[in-house]
Length: 458
Ligand code: MNH
Image (cartoon, rainbow, N blue to C red):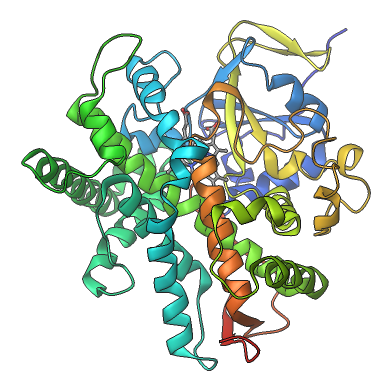
């Protein structure tokens, strides 16, 4: 038995492009999923996309033996900056394998523990800023978390201080990166003829790429000419050989991967921390429990990596934040051979299949009728471990899953535990409800808070 995959009506040449909101594609994908259910397909300027929205179908395509990562849409555009770097390479590209093998252990839990004090150095800059600005300052958490994220990865991976909390002109890099990612997303939704006419945006896009590449090349060449001899990720990339092929990474591949880390950081963990602030502010009960746990475990001292296992509520809040708001909301995969999914939908080899964590993380068959509510308790007491396979996948899947997971996890634990320990937080506009901004990833839009140093601690 076979079934047709539902599709909205198409318009000649552009297909379903008018069904997709170019500023917030995720919103359109959500609407389409509500309209068509577990699966639908759209045609974006000749590129066919099949979206699987239910847990059951998403789980079926989470299988490295039948499906492989698909680099299309915005990711294909991001290759304009980072080529065959880890995130944007196709499985078969040799540089993916080399970088993957060299960097997996460098990003492992133990290696990441060794980066704790560097992470703290940067997160303290945020805490100091909030403390000094005091309770009247209006804080844009997304902006400050982005500074923390970029500074941290750059300090930990290449011993380079961006000093975003101190130097205005350094913001250029952060702005170039943000603009590049936004434009990459838009380019993937533009018909080629429209793109060809947009000379000004193209020139700006190319300029952003050039300036970011220059920074990476500068850091690599200054290290090569004897700059700080630290043991960091850059050192590993420059001086190790792939155990399997005996090859070293080329300078180009190193540059692609340094920039890849900056992208991955810039967007995902800062978004996660911003969503987390939103959810705990909107769920005072969760905030209260989180604070009680942090105070009980730390008793006023700085948090250490060993503490995280004694902070189940913090972990539950983080998991629940990434369930409702996975900051990398959609990944792409494709069948290695012609296949049938869900027992009835034929999908040919190479077709782009979208796996939207954003939707499957709300499947009521897995998460219940309150799937849309923020409830960290559903991640506590062994319930997370008892979830069906692949039901929670904010870090992607299988061999192409996130390499920076332990890194991000430790940093978010550190920053959020420290904030909760030191500050009372409040929304500037108590009636604010979540709005979303999308580039390659998603973050809250228009969220502003105040942070008051707690009276009961010093
Ligand atoms: Mn990360 C891949 C989410 C933090 C570096 N990351 C992925 C994927 C998801 C993801 C989802 C899979 C994408 C795909 O299938 O196309 N990453 C996250 C989230 C956070 C995150 C939600 C934080 C929260 N990621 C980080 C950090 C780094 C990083 C921090 C590095 C410093 N991520 C990567 C790299 C890949 C990746 C590199 C690509 C891995 C590969 O394909 O081999």
